[in-house]
Image (cartoon, rainbow, N blue to C red; front, top):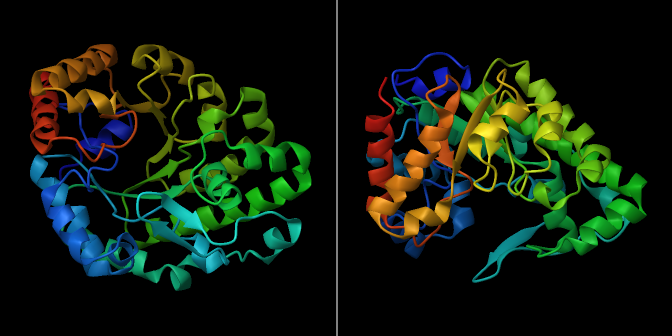
Length: 339
């Protein structure tokens, strides 16, 4: 196996910087769009052979890790919160959380029964891959925001109203979500993933003090347990310039850094005892190959060849991204970072 990614996560010396991309399997790839002409997103996620096919598609670009094709919302339906992906609107929760009674009705699920299709895809992939496989789940705050808002949100007003106004109900919701996420990631590790990533994508909307009070204990419950498995644990969010120290304390052996925080400065703040992942602006891939490569080199320069850097974007690949720009960055990182 090409284990560059795993070695970098463990801050071991590597002969070049490993690279993978969040959302590296998705709408920017023509072969994925062909599948979406026949299947919904949830059909792709819930059909192991299709999830395997999509997971494998971006490997032709030369990336050093595969990330399981799934969606962070998958645990919600077996918990009792049904949803759909509405065309042009993204996820829509059918009955948004608006009361303590609804929170109490949410089930703490057994992922081996309720999400068996995800675990089946992992087991198939482990027999086909020659790069590490990354499993993942949504962070408790990010999942709660979808549940309370009913979908995407610009300001998380309903979520924060519950968080600030009914802290007991909030912590009850977060406790359930954190335990489901912990069990789900544990099940993915048992099924064979080589690393896991917690996507707490929207947590950057919180003030540091509020993150520490309302979110950090629940994230620590998840990540502290996952670290005991021995696999790399990536802790990721966006807009987290003011939260890096608090995220470090919440856990994770690798801290994801978005493009708004200089990589070298972020690394100093999380400490050299952690690996870092990031942090190129996804929009730099939209211009020209030359510009994309220039931005990639900027990240490599900031990392300065220190052990423990995994090259990635600061968030996922955008759907309109040209595939050849992605490949150009992969090739450049491999060549320019060779030790």
